[in-house]
Image 1 (cartoon, rainbow, N blue to C red):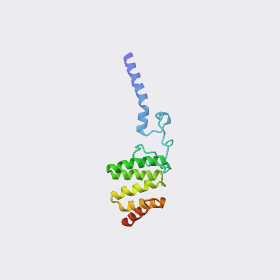
Image 2: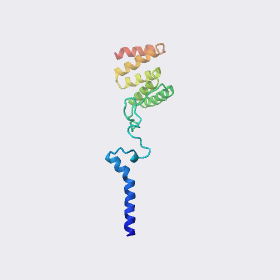
Image 3: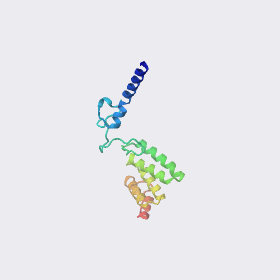
Image 4: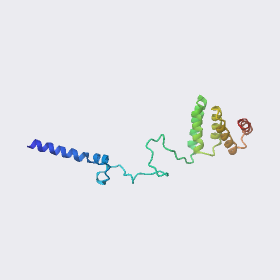
Length: 152
């Protein structure tokens, strides 16, 4: 008899421990059965579009703010890729640099050069135009203007 009672007690404890799992699977919204540390759908942080945050950070939309140090880091990394001949990677880094600091002429110049190597004349034209807008009195401004005439 005592073995039967012990088995029933263990079964009851196991069922109590599994109650939150069963409640979650059945869709129960009983706050007592909520797992610890897990926010309810109303407690979740929502982004500016009203959507829950993306779990995979690699595909989450980035929020860019003015950060000239990050822009310089992206330019250095882009220069490395450019020297290695990885023009697609370099263009991506230079584009990142323009998002961190839209007023950085070097980023726009290097982006134009990378896009020109990739034979994307429209993107190169846009980048060179922005470079001239920011640094119209640069030493190489005449050379860039000639490139813009060729890209038209």
